[in-house]
Amino acid sequence: MSSRSQRPVGRRAATTIFYFLALGSGILRAFSVGFDLVAINTVFGDPIVYGFMSQWVSFATTFGIVAILSIKSGKGDRRRSIGFNLDPDFGRLRLLPRKPMLYLVLAGVFAGISTFLYYTIIGATDASAVLPYGQLVIIYLLMGDLWAEKDTPTIIELQSIMSILIGVLLVGVEPGGFNLMTLFIVLVPMNMASALVTFYQKKTKQYEIEPGLRVDSLNMRVWMLLVLNIVMSILMIPLMPTNFLESMMEYFTPLLIFMVGSSVATFLGLVMYIRALGRGSMSVVNSLSSISVVLGIPMTLIGNLLIPGAFGVITTDAFVWVLKVFGVTLVMIGVIALQATEVRSIVLIKVKPLSGDILPDLFDIRGVQSAAGIAGNHDYILSIKSRSLGKTRTNILKKIQGIHEIESIETLVVLRDYK
Image (cartoon, rainbow, N blue to C red):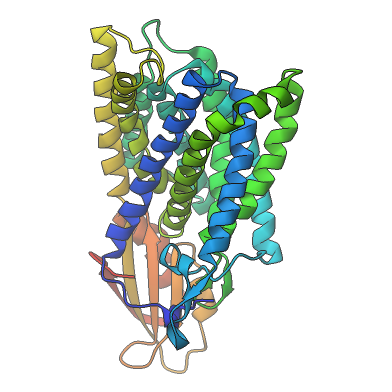
């Protein structure tokens, strides 16, 4: 199993890695939806039966991939699992400790609900509508971040969320207006379930099995997918047609390439998504992964040129396309503005002579990611993160200054770092 001391020094900035992970998860999500749409629109038109087969194929594929990634390579101290390259916390396929496994079970339950709802609507619309509506989960996630921090949103955050909200709605518009039933299903039960999935995934990923070693995203995906499939199957079976077993046997082979393609894209996308959650706030990660909204339009256009009808019906209404392009622009503006607000800082602290240990007090302050006692001109060093420089000053530094043992504080804003 890897540890922090075993990891090579990163050659890329931490922010670059974070953007790569969050954006990459959105791109792969778009490909996953694309595989599902082509399969449903060209091979087998029952999304419930297809979803049932696809998700269990996904579990088998994921389990097999993670088992292969558990194979060790290298020699001596450099001997690591192949999966180390995907997630440095990964050692082998294994059950997680009790507490993170509980978080993961909760994430799987809500993911099962969200996945069931996804397959109920995917057969009724096209990629340019399915992908945007799912990004409305950002609203719930920002509310979750604010609730966790017992804080109020900044003006920039409100403007960013409104920009993403309006943009997403415009991208999903249809010639007759909005598909209100689809919008309601996605906005209320599906996105609320997705927000809880993200919340419990983040708690799981942040759990330290041992110092410097967190829960890995590969094992998270395997066990959450198992719970997801059980919950989804319980919800789907009552809706299955009477001949669903015969249908699965007849269409399994023609659908297999699409199901495996969707499984691999989803697996890699979620691994990147979970790793991004370990590096940034839920709302920022999801705002960056909303690149899938932008991809929905070219995917629908190009996909239907290659395979007519595979990605839904393309409207010829010029006004609708103007709205969609304007919506994409608003989404990108909101994404850029929201992710730009997050600030990391290093705080150097010097305490008064004969002061006791205040390390636990410092670490308990919300926003402090790590705290350590050091030797030299300063006594403690903190790594803190907040949603804006103003929040750093008002929510974190004021609480640090309120500890009476502290003599002086020096704050350094991080412009670029490597991990």
